[in-house]
Every structure is written in structure tokens, then in C-alpha cells.
Amino acid sequence: MAHDVPVIQLKDISFTWPGAGAPTLDGVNLTIETKDRIGIMAPNGSGKTTLFHTIMGLCIPDAGTIEVLGQPMKTEKDFEQIRSRVGLLFQDADDQLFSPTVIDDVCFGPLNLGFSPAEALEQSRAILDRLGIANLEDCITHKLSGGQKRLVALAAVMAMEPELLLLDEPTAGLDAGVKNTLADTLVSLSIPYIVISHEFDFISAVTNRIFSMEKGRILTDDEVHIHQHEHMHKLGKFPHKHV
Amino acid sequence: MDESLARQESWMHRMDPCVRVITAVIVSFCAALCHDVNILVGHVLMSLVLVGMAKLPPVAVFKRLKPLFWFLVMIWVVMPFTHEGEPLVLMGPVALTRPGVMLCVNISLKSVTILLYFMALVATMTVATLGQALHCLHVPDKMIFLLLMTYRYISVIQSEYHRLLRAAKFRGFVPGTNIHSYRTYAYLAGMLFVRASRRAARVYDAMRCRGFNGKFHTLDTFSPGVVNHLFLTLVSMTALGLVVTETLLM
Image (cartoon, rainbow over all chains, first blue to last red; front, side):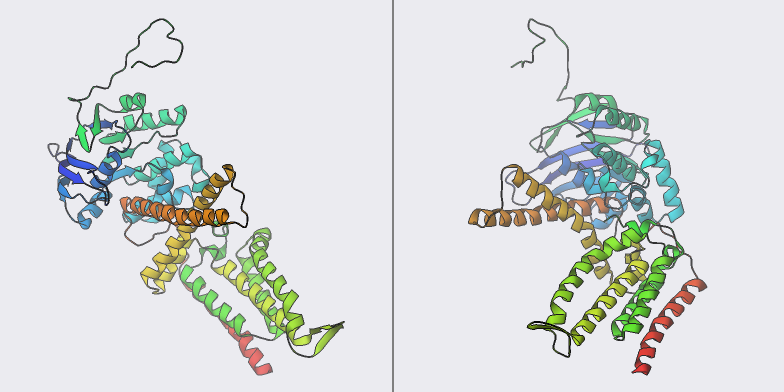
């Protein structure tokens, strides 16, 4: 992959859910470079998940062009090829885990890519080990805890060795320990990724640019500045709001 | 949905899944064709041998037979008294008839045998492997996909149902014989289908994202070759032999 080719280039992408009044994506332009680690923080319903699904070809846009890893995406066949190179971590880990055991599920992707069972097993075990969940290998997926499910789902996506990761609220419902494991794993990756999250601490720890979305449009970091600062005043120890 | 019988280790588990499916179909047909009690006992013994070869834990086997036992109890309560024929025991106005009892014995032995055959031969493979075996046997891919997806989503629908019912109960819903209860159940059923189909769409999307294109692969590896064919021939011939023996005896 040449370095000057953007990983993703979206041009004027519009998408309206059937039956919805306003468009969910309204002329979105987005370019992701190889070094980018982008965080998206935006209110619920602002089109973040739809944006991810559009990149993966799960939602077909009404207008605009998509280029992923330098290839223009038009037909289902184009997307089929690209899906093995872009990993999407779904919002709900339960949607992603459908095999009875953890190792079956992690091997699902590699087997689809044409790996032999032995190669798939080796690769999947390496990923489980890297995420520190090698002990879960033979566990039944639907009996795992929420945090374990999320890590297994991430392992399942990473086992396909994607060149780009899209993570849809990876921290939702996780405790601090699992969140730290997740953050450490992401920071150690050498591939670009986009993270959707509502948690400022997490997003600022794992990304180098933060975008927001509003009314189906992306606001880049020239337009938004998410910041926090500490201050003190009288009665500050009681819960309060600044209006 | 744990496929616990498939997660054991035995000679049977390593056998080619196609061979096991074919064998299961042949021996089940043979068992269904027999009527003689002695021959049927022979089938039961053979199915027990196969279950033993698959090293299935007896408790797990019994647990899977339990629903069948309830069904058989129902038949045993009704059939011997209602079937016409020579009375075996007279109990006041009702009579236990000999053909009724024989029919019950027949049904019981056949159903237990066939279930045991399938447990030993088919339940010892995961559903994904079964899909692969059916693919080898040239069953249309759409049918296999339907089977695999049904299997996958039954547990999803079940858990959605429990979640909805729990939510209703937590808000004080007590089922009764009234319009409110019927309407609540109708809403529940409707919501169940809506949710299940939406989740199914999401799961399918997740599968597509991981390179799924309609074909299931499996991690299991199987011993190829002569042993498989030997097994198929031996077991099928024994089962057919039992049918032939019965025909000759009659």
C-alpha cells in the first residue's frame, strides 16, 4: 500500500434511512490517512454507526463516492473484497459472537479467508494470547461476561489482520480494568483506526484527532475543541452544574 | 445449544461426518421398518453399542431421552386401553388389549432406538460440521443455510422472549384469562419477531464483515479413508440384516 493513498476517502456521502425524514448522513467528506487514529464523539443518533456501516458497505449511500484502501467501492463485490481488510467492531458484542465456543468464533474470519484449520487455530490463539484471554479459548460464547465478550469480539476482528479498524463504542458497559486492556491494545497497534465513544478519557488516550458529528455532517477538529479543565470555587465538593 | 455431545473426544467423533449422516439415515430406516420385538431389541442393543463407541456420558444421553419418555408415557396411558383387540387384562369396564400393548412396545423401542442412533452418529458433530456433511451429500446450499441459520437464531429468539417476559413481569404483569393478558401476549409475540429479525440482520451484517459468503467452514478434522467405509458397510449391513431376518422369519 502506497503511503500517499488515503486509507479511506469519503466524498459527499449522503444516506437516508427508509422512512426517515431527515438524512442520517448529509454530504459527509472524510479522509483517513495511514497514521490517523481518529476519535468520534457525538450525540446519539447523529449518524456515527451509519457512517461505519457505509464504509463497510452495509448501508448503500444515496449519493457520493467511497474509496477504501485506494479502491473505489461501487458494487457488493468490491465491498466483499474490502471487508476482510477493514475490521468493524460492532456496538453489541452479542451480534458478533455466533459460534458456540470462543475459538470457533475467532477462527470464523480466518477460515472464511481461506486459511487451513491449523493456520486459523494458530493465528487465533496468538491473538487471544495477545489480548490476555487465552484462558477463554474453550468457553461457551453466550456464557461470557460483557467485558469478556467485547475482548473476544475484538480478537475475532483482529484475527483477520485488518489494515484498518472501526470500533463502535468499544468501551460501553466495560469496567476500568477491561477499558485499560482495550486502550493498551489499541495504542500498541500499528494500523489506523476510528473509535466512536462517549468517554473523553478513553478517546483522548487512544486517538490523535477527535471529530464530532452534527445533523449528518462531520465536524473536524478545526471546528470542535473538546477540552476539560479543573477549577475551584465555594461549595465545589457538592455535585453541581455550570449553565 | 452448547453442542456438548459434539465436544467430546472419541473414535466416532473423528469419523467422516458424511459417513455418519448416511449411516444414521440407513439404520434409522431399518429400525423403522422392523416390527418384531426381538429384532427391535437387537436394534436397541446396536444403538447402545454405537452410543458406547461415541463415549457419550450416560447422564447426558438420559437427559436427552427425557422429553421422549414423557411422550411415551402419554401413549402408554391411552393406547393399550383404546386399541381394539384381544383383551390382556380386564379392569372393570376397561380392558388392556394385547395389540395395544404390543404397539406401545413397538413405538417405544423404535423411537428410543432412532434417537440413540442420531445421538451417537449425528449429535456427535457440531451443526457447522453437519452443514458441511450435507454439502458433501449435495443437499442444496439454501436448505443447509436455512438449517444453520434456524439453529443459530432459535436461541436468540428464546432469549429475547425471556427478556421481554421478564420486563413485563417486573411491571406487575400476571397472566390471566382476560383481554389485557391476551393483548400483552400478542404485543410480546409481535415485538419478538420485530426484535429477532432486526438482530438477525445485525448478526448477518457482522458475519458479512468477517468474510462470510454463504459457506460454513469448520475447525474439525476427520480421519479419512478405509475405516470410514468399513464402518458404514458394517453398521448398515447389520441393520439391513435385521430387516431381512425379520422378513424371513415371517
